[in-house]
Length: 455
Image 1 (cartoon, rainbow, N blue to C red):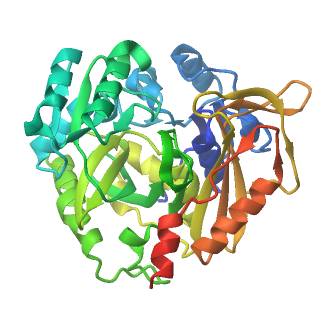
Image 2 (tube, rainbow, N blue to C red; image 1 turned 45 degrees about the vertical axis):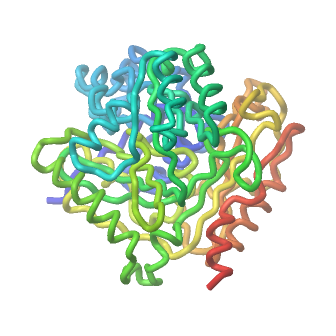
C-alpha cells in the first residue's frame, strides 16, 4: 500500500525561503492546501496558498489555526521559533511538525554548544574559546599565544549578522565591545572566539529523521553586502548551486566521479554525523545545515544551523526534480532511508534584491511594480532555462498594491546550463522589479565563474 502523504500544509515564516518552500510544495500532487503564517506578498499572490496573519512567535495562534484547518504537516522556516520551542509546543498539541525540538535546535542557537558537540563527535572544526566576560575575552585576543583567534561570534541567534572576521587585535576588541555592549541583545551574553581560516565556504543542507542523514543540496552563500565580498555581513546577498569545489565531478547523469573534497566531507563530516544519529549519540530531526570552510583541501565545520538556509533554499530547490513533500514527511515518521533524490543538471544563481541601505536600514511601505511575467508559480516542473522571483520582504496591502516590508525584498533566481547564463537570467528578472531604493550585488557566483574560466 502506498504511503499517504500529508495534504494540508502550514508553513511558518514569511521570507524568501518560505515562498520557495510554498512554490516547491505546490508542485506535489498530494498537496491540497497550503497556508503560510504570516507569509508575504508573493505567497499572497499564489492561488494555491492562503496567508494567515500570525507572527512566527504566536505559538497559540499557530496551533489553533493548524487545528482549525486540519493541517497534516507544519513546516517551520525561521530559526527564532525553533529556538523558542515551537516544535515542542505544537507536538504537545498533537500536530505533526517538520523541524527540530528546542533542545535539538541548540546546535544553532548556541555556538558554544555546537562547538562542544563537534569536539565530542570528533568532527573537524577550528580552534575556539568561549567567554561570558568582556574583560576575559579581551585578554584572550590580546595574548600573543592566541594570535590565531581572529573570528568573533555572538553565541546566540543574531539574524546572520553576529559574526566578525577580523584582521587585527583592534578589530577583535571593537567586535567584542559591540557584542557585549548589547548590539545583539541576549545573543551577546557569551562569545565564541575562533581560529581564522582562509578558504572557500560551502553550505551543505541535509535532512534527518533522527536515524538517517540525507543530503539536500550544496550551495555557496555571499554574506557580504557589497561586490567582491566587501562590507558588513548580512543575512545573505545571494547564493548559487551547484558549487564546483563540491559537485563539479558530477556529470549530466548525476554520476559522481572522484572528488577529493567531496570524499573528505563524506568521510570526515557526513559519515560521523550519520553514525552518531544511528547510535543515539546525536539527537536531531529536521534540516541540519552544515556550514563548511575548505582550507587547503581540508574541510572544517564552521557552524550548524537547524533549518533551511536563506538564500540557499531559493537556489537549491529549483534544481530539485523530486517531490519535496515525501522527503519532509519521511523525516517526521522515520522512513528517510528509503528516499532518493533526482537533480537537474542546470546551474542556479540566486541574487537578493535589497533596500539600498540594507543591512543598516530596511524599507517599508514603498510601492513595488513588477513586469509580467513575474515568475513561474504555476506548479510546473523546471525543465528548461528560466527565471523565478521569490518574494522576501514584501506585503500585499489592503488596496491590492505590493509594497516593501523588509531589508531583503526579493530573491531573483536564474536557471541555465551555465553559471554565467543563470546569473544573466537573474539580472534580467531584477530588471523587471521596480522600487526606488532597489539594490543588489552584480557579482553573485563570481568564484564559480572564475573557476570555470580557468579550465
